[in-house]
Length: 426
Image (cartoon, rainbow, N blue to C red; front, side, top):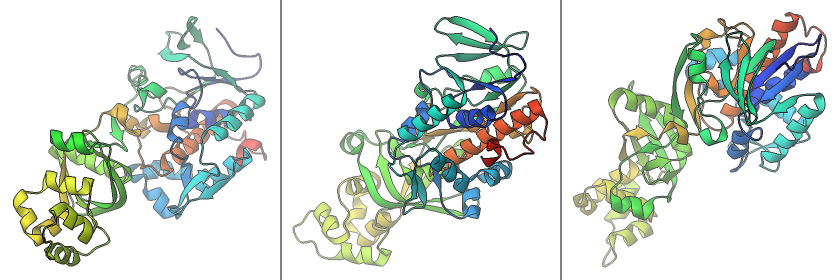
């Protein structure tokens, strides 16, 4: 099978998430044919799922703080984000007719908080520009001649392309297409791939049956989570934490998940501390608990004096020795710094995103695989990670743009955008 028209290069984009679609948008403005292939029945399925709770598209914090979110891979991602960062991404969204706003936390959302209108407008623009979509086409590598191989509902097909952009996602949420099935396909081509690991994930604790049955699904509202790393540095996050059947998850946990995951891998467990009353000083909590409670139960006393109730009381009962409830200073210390031992991250398929992927050393500055000329890679399949808060999406968009520009430069020469083209505006 051959999609190529005479005289016009053909580029295949495999993966229809944000990175792949952004690559397609750049490519279609560069005098090439663009064909997008995806194993799923429709495009952007994980993007839509991520937006169900409110589409956090990027973040409006200061540049230095923003770039710091990418940790060890900041050096590789900073040039891409300098070219297409949060403000450029917002302007691009506005070009689709979608307004955005900055929330109180600095997170940026579409005006209606939804992903679907944005994706619909984007896909419409891509189709009108000439991008061809081929759904239910699962990539299965290359044949001996270098043709791309796909499994489709109508049978297997092989096709040639002048350049390829791989944007297949990581290893989380396999039911939405990010299943990591591409890893052995690249390893067979001697491409180094760091093992895929869960990121922005929950962790197992090992609750007693009573606590699990009574409190799974209950939120620990307004707590502060603190983790001390191996170097003695303190990492604190505040927000709501969800008790699950196996452990805990939620925004503060996701923000610390890379540190927690790596500590567990190195030492077998990670201990964090929960402040169940972050707005109160230790001395005040101790004094309130020491106040005579008369005939009231301890649960009623804690609720009335310290506003500790429900799942927070249950957690204290789960983690604190019964004798400590008779000592206000001990109980107060537990309320202000309750140690919680995490024993394992949740499985990769449950994670919001994944760490690991194609090592950056395998790529040139245009995100082309050094050992596979003409093959570019973008998105979560590269070896980087970031917390939730718009950082993941922003980097995926920036990488997709860079891969698209790289493919065009490889096809047409480095000066192909010397004029004021539409692709330059992105």
